[in-house]
Structure formats: C-alpha cells, structure tokens
Image (cartoon, rainbow over all chains, first blue to last red; front, side, top):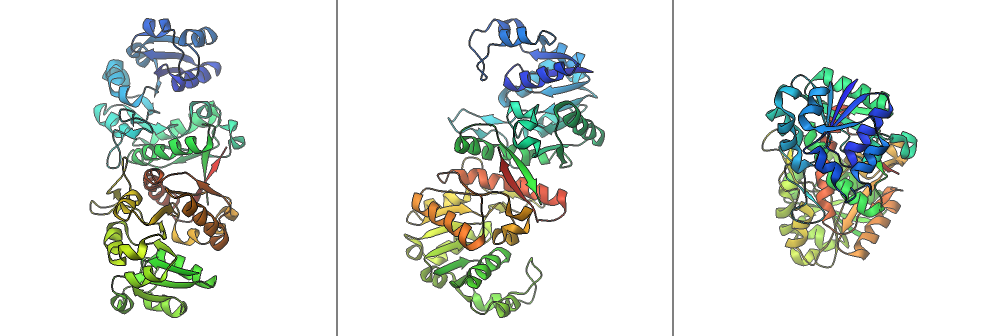
Length: 226
Length: 226
C-alpha cells in the first residue's frame, strides 16, 4: 500500500523503515528533504538521516505534500510543536478522506526538562488537528511508547502489553487496529472510542517521561490488567 | 498504629476499614460527623455511612482536626475540590511532621462528564497541598486505582500490577512503600521520586476514566512492563 510518514526523526524512521520492510511503498515527508539529508549532526537515535536513508533505500524522502499526496494512510510523526505547520504544508487536499494517524505529542520543552504539554486537559493535539483538517480521518495511536516499541512490541514483555487508539471515524479506527496488528505485531489494541480520548492518551505522556527517568531507559510499556 | 483517614466516601471507607481490620486504631475525619452519619442517601458504593459505620465499629468518625491530631499517618481521601478546605480544617499543627498520603485527584465535574482536572500539567493537587502545608510530608499514591483495588490489589490480575508513589521526603516515601506492601498487599510499588511526579500521576486519571468507560467497570489497573 502507498504509505506516507511525515517527519524524519526517530519515530518517522522507525515507522517508515518497518512499513518499507513489510513491502509497502513508503514516502517520508520532510519540510526540506535536501537540507535534512545534508545535516551532519546525528538524530536522537545517534544516526544521521543520510545514513539511515542509505540503509533504507526503498523509502523516498520528499516534501510533506508529496508524501501526503502519495499515501493512502498517513502517519504524523513530526514533533508536537511542528505538527500543525507540517500538516499545513502537507496540504488539506492531500489529507482529505485519508486515515491520518497522529503519533505526535504536544510536548513543550520551552520551560526546560521535563517537558510540559502545550495543550491538555480539555483539548488535545489530535483534536486540534482534526478541527483544522475536518476531512482527514484522524486516529491517535502509538504515542504512548517509544519508537522502537511502536513497530516491535515484542521488544518488551514478549509483546504482552497494551496499545491504545481513538478517533471519530469507526472505519478508520478499525483500519488502524488491523494495521497495528498486522504490520507491527500489536496483539492487545484497546479502542477507546472517539477522539476526545486523545486528551487522556496525551496526558499519559508525562507519566511515560517520569517512568523513563525512573527506569533509566525507554524500553517499557504498560499493560492494562483486569 | 494511630491512623487518620480524612473523608468518609468510598475511598476513605475502603482505607479506614482495611486499616482497622489490620488492627490499627483508625479515626476517620469528616467536616460534620453527625450530619454525615445522619445522611440517608447512599454513597457511591451504594451504602449509607451509618450502615458502613455499623459494620466497622472500631473506626471512630470524628471532625477532621480530631482525626489528624490522633494520627501518625494521615490519608487524604476527600474529594479533590474539597481537599484543601478539609486539610485546613484538619489543622496545620496536626499535619506537621506527619506522613500525609494524598489519594485525592483534582477532578473538576463542573463542566459535566467526563471530568477534567482543575490543576494539571505544570502543577498538581499534591504539590499545592505540600506548598500550603510545608511541614507535612506529602506522599502521593493510590490515586490511580479504584477504592476496592487500593486495599486489595489481588482483586485484579492476582495483584500483578503496579502502584506508584512520589514525595519529597525520602523517609516518608519509604514508609508509604512499606505500608502499601504490608497493610494492603501491593507487591509492585514504583517510587517515582519527588512530588513533581504527582503531575504525571494525576494526569493519568483521565486515561483511567476513559478505560473505565471502555471496559465498563472499575476493576482494572496497569502493570508497567519492560
């Protein structure tokens, strides 16, 4: 399937690399692909984008609009603060009618560490995106684990933990639930209903940040038990 | 040990009842004990306080200040919106030097269901309590599960799930971790460090509310897996 991944950071790379290795035609969107590929400082994962690209030759790195235009399913893997600009660049017409999986969290690093959220409680980044692009089918998921676990849940606890999703379109939620299972291997996907649940998923992230600090590494997740 | 539990709702009853059954001398604090006992409408657990009291004769129901004065360890099990007034009634001098376990969440029901939080993100109810009562040793815990699970973790998943705590006083955190294990049976208690982690624990509650709606009952918890 034609897939688009907006953002060339750790999250975008993990998702795009996995989808390409599964045989999908993946275009990764960047504000400025040439500049991103020319950057010599490594990303959060310690790898320069050019080196990652060399190891993932089948993934094209193109402007946001070309990636969105190409895709039937689009992942927003940009930073929270850059998400809305990236999606505007992607183009409303290129998002319309498509499943748009928001992985981005509204993290605000401007007041230092740990980050706070620039939207929370009575609104969420996913809802703001849905409101700005009413014809996109926004589904929030994957934002509660680190990039490596998103596409390889068995990296912790043999995959016996929980992924959440929410969104206003029933078919889009079903599509994403199936994709999470078939492409990434998530066995426990919990559908929380409409997109207001994104408030809860994004407000979980400060606990993730605190758990990261306490456990000393990001290879953890939570399992809902009853 | 002399224990105080502020609040006579479901949470206060669960904690006070369990501590009393373990042999502790428990006083439960109320704004107006006589009025609370005279109330004929049942609480959230379907039981009138007077009936609960009849089944828990060893628990005295007294004014907030008397419960706090009596106690070496105090649980704040009041509603979030009533917490600060209750603690002011309890009396700064009766809280000073004592471990004060905040179980209360800053839930705001004024805009309907689901509740939002009246403090979050860059502050928390627990931190506000600590600031107002600097000589109390505030520890936040138990606020991430329902009352029945707080004192009986094996009610779900054979007790194989996670309880969190945080607070600024190292000894107080250790005291609470031991209490959670020995009095209530928590096997997995995760110490998140200083009280700023209360922001994360309280911001988890909207996800709890959403999980409650999705799962249809409150008998669930989360296990941190790695």
